[in-house]
Image 1 (tube, rainbow, N blue to C red):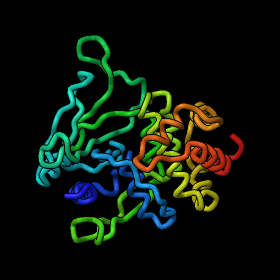
Image 2 (cartoon, rainbow, N blue to C red):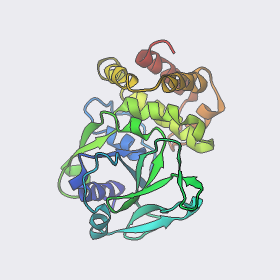
Image 3 (spheres, rainbow, N blue to C red):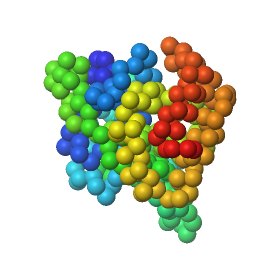
Image 4 (cartoon, one colour):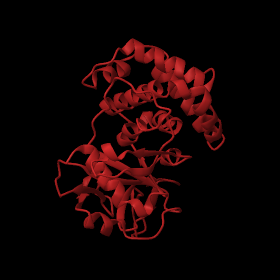
Length: 277
Protein backbone atom coordinates (compact mmCIF):
# COMPACT_ATOMS: atom_id res chain seq x y z
CA UNK A 1 0.00 0.00 0.00
CA UNK A 2 1.41 3.38 -0.96
CA UNK A 3 1.87 6.14 1.60
CA UNK A 4 -0.96 8.12 0.03
CA UNK A 5 -3.26 5.10 0.10
CA UNK A 6 -2.45 4.56 3.77
CA UNK A 7 -3.19 8.19 4.55
CA UNK A 8 -6.43 8.01 2.55
CA UNK A 9 -7.44 5.00 4.61
CA UNK A 10 -6.84 6.97 7.80
CA UNK A 11 -8.80 9.94 6.47
CA UNK A 12 -11.75 7.75 5.46
CA UNK A 13 -11.73 6.07 8.87
CA UNK A 14 -11.95 9.48 10.54
CA UNK A 15 -14.75 10.66 8.24
CA UNK A 16 -17.31 11.00 11.10
CA UNK A 17 -15.00 13.58 12.72
CA UNK A 18 -13.80 15.22 9.49
CA UNK A 19 -15.34 18.61 10.22
CA UNK A 20 -13.65 18.79 13.63
CA UNK A 21 -10.12 17.55 12.88
CA UNK A 22 -7.24 19.17 10.99
CA UNK A 23 -4.37 17.24 9.40
CA UNK A 24 -1.18 19.06 10.36
CA UNK A 25 2.55 18.42 10.08
CA UNK A 26 4.24 17.00 7.00
CA UNK A 27 1.05 15.56 5.54
CA UNK A 28 -0.51 19.02 5.52
CA UNK A 29 2.26 20.16 3.20
CA UNK A 30 1.79 17.13 0.94
CA UNK A 31 -1.92 17.87 0.75
CA UNK A 32 -1.32 21.50 -0.24
CA UNK A 33 -0.58 20.20 -3.72
CA UNK A 34 -4.30 19.54 -4.17
CA UNK A 35 -5.23 23.16 -3.53
CA UNK A 36 -5.87 25.01 -6.81
CA UNK A 37 -3.93 28.05 -5.53
CA UNK A 38 -0.76 26.02 -5.11
CA UNK A 39 1.99 26.24 -7.69
CA UNK A 40 3.15 22.81 -8.82
CA UNK A 41 6.76 22.86 -7.68
CA UNK A 42 9.45 20.64 -9.12
CA UNK A 43 10.55 19.65 -5.61
CA UNK A 44 9.32 16.51 -3.92
CA UNK A 45 7.84 16.96 -0.41
CA UNK A 46 9.73 15.46 2.50
CA UNK A 47 8.59 11.89 3.08
CA UNK A 48 6.90 11.28 6.41
CA UNK A 49 5.52 8.09 7.91
CA UNK A 50 3.38 9.79 10.54
CA UNK A 51 0.14 11.68 10.13
CA UNK A 52 -0.58 14.29 12.80
CA UNK A 53 -4.27 14.81 13.53
CA UNK A 54 -5.15 17.92 15.54
CA UNK A 55 -8.39 18.79 17.27
CA UNK A 56 -9.88 21.17 19.80
CA UNK A 57 -11.56 19.10 22.52
CA UNK A 58 -14.29 21.72 22.84
CA UNK A 59 -15.33 21.09 19.24
CA UNK A 60 -14.70 17.36 18.78
CA UNK A 61 -17.92 15.40 18.54
CA UNK A 62 -18.47 12.43 20.80
CA UNK A 63 -17.69 8.96 19.57
CA UNK A 64 -14.99 6.33 19.80
CA UNK A 65 -12.16 7.18 17.45
CA UNK A 66 -10.05 4.35 18.84
CA UNK A 67 -12.72 1.77 17.99
CA UNK A 68 -13.00 3.19 14.47
CA UNK A 69 -9.24 2.98 13.98
CA UNK A 70 -9.03 -0.56 15.30
CA UNK A 71 -11.84 -1.57 12.97
CA UNK A 72 -9.77 -0.23 10.07
CA UNK A 73 -6.64 -2.15 11.05
CA UNK A 74 -4.82 0.37 13.23
CA UNK A 75 -3.18 -0.75 16.47
CA UNK A 76 -2.65 1.45 19.51
CA UNK A 77 0.96 1.52 20.69
CA UNK A 78 2.17 3.48 23.74
CA UNK A 79 5.12 5.82 23.71
CA UNK A 80 6.45 5.62 27.25
CA UNK A 81 9.03 8.38 26.82
CA UNK A 82 8.50 11.12 29.36
CA UNK A 83 6.51 8.93 31.72
CA UNK A 84 3.29 10.81 30.95
CA UNK A 85 -0.06 9.57 32.27
CA UNK A 86 -1.87 8.62 30.22
CA UNK A 87 1.09 7.72 27.98
CA UNK A 88 1.23 9.28 24.54
CA UNK A 89 -0.08 6.91 21.88
CA UNK A 90 0.53 6.27 18.22
CA UNK A 91 -1.89 4.34 16.03
CA UNK A 92 0.00 2.13 13.58
CA UNK A 93 -1.52 0.56 10.52
CA UNK A 94 -1.32 -3.23 10.73
CA UNK A 95 0.70 -2.99 13.94
CA UNK A 96 3.89 -2.23 11.99
CA UNK A 97 6.04 -0.12 14.31
CA UNK A 98 8.15 1.05 11.37
CA UNK A 99 5.25 1.76 9.03
CA UNK A 100 2.56 4.39 8.64
CA UNK A 101 0.99 5.66 11.85
CA UNK A 102 -1.19 8.45 13.19
CA UNK A 103 -0.77 10.61 16.28
CA UNK A 104 -3.34 12.94 17.80
CA UNK A 105 -2.58 16.45 19.05
CA UNK A 106 -4.56 19.05 20.96
CA UNK A 107 -3.73 22.56 22.23
CA UNK A 108 -1.96 23.02 25.54
CA UNK A 109 -3.33 25.95 27.49
CA UNK A 110 -2.65 27.32 30.93
CA UNK A 111 0.48 26.63 32.95
CA UNK A 112 1.26 23.25 31.43
CA UNK A 113 0.98 21.61 34.85
CA UNK A 114 -1.79 19.63 36.53
CA UNK A 115 -2.29 18.07 39.94
CA UNK A 116 -0.81 14.62 40.41
CA UNK A 117 -3.26 13.46 43.08
CA UNK A 118 -0.52 13.44 45.69
CA UNK A 119 -0.50 17.12 46.54
CA UNK A 120 2.02 17.99 43.85
CA UNK A 121 2.09 18.90 40.18
CA UNK A 122 3.01 17.01 37.02
CA UNK A 123 3.31 17.78 33.32
CA UNK A 124 -0.03 18.36 31.61
CA UNK A 125 1.20 16.63 28.47
CA UNK A 126 -1.52 14.23 27.31
CA UNK A 127 -5.26 13.68 27.47
CA UNK A 128 -7.69 10.87 26.75
CA UNK A 129 -10.66 11.97 24.63
CA UNK A 130 -12.96 10.14 22.22
CA UNK A 131 -11.04 6.94 22.92
CA UNK A 132 -7.63 8.20 21.81
CA UNK A 133 -4.74 9.71 23.73
CA UNK A 134 -3.57 13.04 22.32
CA UNK A 135 -0.40 14.95 23.10
CA UNK A 136 -0.88 18.55 24.22
CA UNK A 137 1.25 21.15 22.43
CA UNK A 138 1.75 24.90 22.70
CA UNK A 139 0.57 27.10 19.82
CA UNK A 140 -1.38 24.25 18.23
CA UNK A 141 -4.49 26.44 18.23
CA UNK A 142 -2.84 28.53 15.49
CA UNK A 143 -3.05 25.50 13.18
CA UNK A 144 -6.77 25.16 13.87
CA UNK A 145 -7.56 28.73 12.77
CA UNK A 146 -9.61 28.92 9.55
CA UNK A 147 -8.36 25.70 7.94
CA UNK A 148 -8.52 25.19 4.19
CA UNK A 149 -10.20 22.25 2.46
CA UNK A 150 -8.51 19.92 -0.01
CA UNK A 151 -9.63 16.78 -1.82
CA UNK A 152 -7.49 13.82 -2.85
CA UNK A 153 -8.83 12.84 -6.28
CA UNK A 154 -10.08 9.34 -6.99
CA UNK A 155 -7.22 8.53 -9.34
CA UNK A 156 -4.62 9.29 -6.64
CA UNK A 157 -6.23 8.23 -3.36
CA UNK A 158 -5.44 4.54 -3.78
CA UNK A 159 -8.97 3.69 -2.66
CA UNK A 160 -10.87 4.00 -5.96
CA UNK A 161 -12.75 7.00 -4.59
CA UNK A 162 -12.02 10.63 -3.86
CA UNK A 163 -11.26 11.62 -0.27
CA UNK A 164 -13.07 14.91 -0.02
CA UNK A 165 -12.96 18.02 2.16
CA UNK A 166 -9.92 17.26 4.27
CA UNK A 167 -9.08 20.13 6.58
CA UNK A 168 -5.48 21.36 6.59
CA UNK A 169 -3.98 24.47 8.21
CA UNK A 170 -4.15 27.52 6.01
CA UNK A 171 -0.58 28.21 4.79
CA UNK A 172 -0.22 31.32 6.96
CA UNK A 173 -1.02 29.38 10.12
CA UNK A 174 1.29 26.58 8.98
CA UNK A 175 4.24 28.97 8.70
CA UNK A 176 3.39 31.15 11.71
CA UNK A 177 3.20 28.16 14.03
CA UNK A 178 6.69 27.11 12.98
CA UNK A 179 7.99 30.59 13.73
CA UNK A 180 6.36 30.50 17.17
CA UNK A 181 7.86 27.11 18.13
CA UNK A 182 11.35 27.78 16.73
CA UNK A 183 12.99 27.95 20.17
CA UNK A 184 11.43 24.61 21.12
CA UNK A 185 12.97 22.90 18.09
CA UNK A 186 16.60 21.86 17.86
CA UNK A 187 19.00 20.58 15.24
CA UNK A 188 17.45 18.87 12.24
CA UNK A 189 13.88 19.56 13.39
CA UNK A 190 14.45 23.32 13.26
CA UNK A 191 16.09 22.99 9.85
CA UNK A 192 13.18 20.87 8.65
CA UNK A 193 10.74 23.57 9.77
CA UNK A 194 12.72 26.15 7.79
CA UNK A 195 12.51 23.91 4.72
CA UNK A 196 8.74 23.59 5.13
CA UNK A 197 8.39 27.37 5.47
CA UNK A 198 10.47 27.98 2.36
CA UNK A 199 8.60 25.40 0.29
CA UNK A 200 5.22 26.69 1.47
CA UNK A 201 6.12 30.24 0.44
CA UNK A 202 7.29 28.91 -2.90
CA UNK A 203 4.12 27.04 -3.85
CA UNK A 204 1.80 29.80 -2.61
CA UNK A 205 3.91 32.78 -3.64
CA UNK A 206 1.45 33.79 -6.34
CA UNK A 207 -1.38 33.81 -3.79
CA UNK A 208 0.32 35.90 -1.08
CA UNK A 209 -1.36 39.19 -1.90
CA UNK A 210 -4.76 37.81 -2.88
CA UNK A 211 -5.24 35.01 -0.33
CA UNK A 212 -2.54 34.90 2.34
CA UNK A 213 -2.39 38.56 3.39
CA UNK A 214 -6.13 38.65 4.25
CA UNK A 215 -5.71 35.44 6.29
CA UNK A 216 -2.75 36.97 8.13
CA UNK A 217 -4.74 40.06 9.07
CA UNK A 218 -7.51 37.86 10.52
CA UNK A 219 -5.09 35.59 12.34
CA UNK A 220 -2.98 38.46 13.66
CA UNK A 221 -6.05 39.93 15.37
CA UNK A 222 -6.43 36.72 17.44
CA UNK A 223 -2.84 36.67 18.67
CA UNK A 224 -1.39 38.10 21.86
CA UNK A 225 1.01 41.02 21.43
CA UNK A 226 3.88 38.82 22.62
CA UNK A 227 3.05 36.27 19.95
CA UNK A 228 2.96 38.90 17.21
CA UNK A 229 6.34 40.14 18.42
CA UNK A 230 7.74 36.60 18.49
CA UNK A 231 6.65 35.93 14.91
CA UNK A 232 8.50 38.96 13.57
CA UNK A 233 11.52 38.18 15.71
CA UNK A 234 11.47 34.67 14.27
CA UNK A 235 11.57 35.98 10.72
CA UNK A 236 14.53 38.22 11.57
CA UNK A 237 16.37 35.46 13.43
CA UNK A 238 15.97 32.84 10.71
CA UNK A 239 15.90 34.84 7.48
CA UNK A 240 17.80 38.12 7.91
CA UNK A 241 21.08 36.59 6.73
CA UNK A 242 22.59 33.29 5.67
CA UNK A 243 23.01 30.90 8.60
CA UNK A 244 23.69 27.26 9.42
CA UNK A 245 19.99 26.45 9.84
CA UNK A 246 19.23 27.46 6.25
CA UNK A 247 22.29 25.59 4.99
CA UNK A 248 21.19 22.45 6.85
CA UNK A 249 17.63 22.84 5.59
CA UNK A 250 18.87 22.97 2.01
CA UNK A 251 20.61 19.62 2.49
CA UNK A 252 17.60 17.71 3.89
CA UNK A 253 15.69 16.75 0.72
CA UNK A 254 17.06 14.32 -1.85
CA UNK A 255 16.85 17.11 -4.42
CA UNK A 256 19.14 19.55 -2.62
CA UNK A 257 18.13 23.22 -2.53
CA UNK A 258 20.10 26.40 -3.11
CA UNK A 259 20.39 28.01 0.34
CA UNK A 260 20.83 31.50 -1.12
CA UNK A 261 17.65 31.09 -3.16
CA UNK A 262 15.80 29.84 -0.07
CA UNK A 263 16.93 32.85 1.95
CA UNK A 264 15.92 35.32 -0.77
CA UNK A 265 12.54 33.67 -1.22
CA UNK A 266 11.76 33.80 2.50
CA UNK A 267 12.93 37.42 2.85
CA UNK A 268 10.76 38.62 -0.01
CA UNK A 269 7.82 36.38 0.85
CA UNK A 270 7.59 37.52 4.46
CA UNK A 271 8.03 41.16 3.47
CA UNK A 272 5.02 40.80 1.19
CA UNK A 273 3.02 38.82 3.76
CA UNK A 274 3.75 40.78 6.94
CA UNK A 275 4.93 44.10 5.59
CA UNK A 276 8.27 45.37 6.88
CA UNK A 277 9.56 42.88 9.46
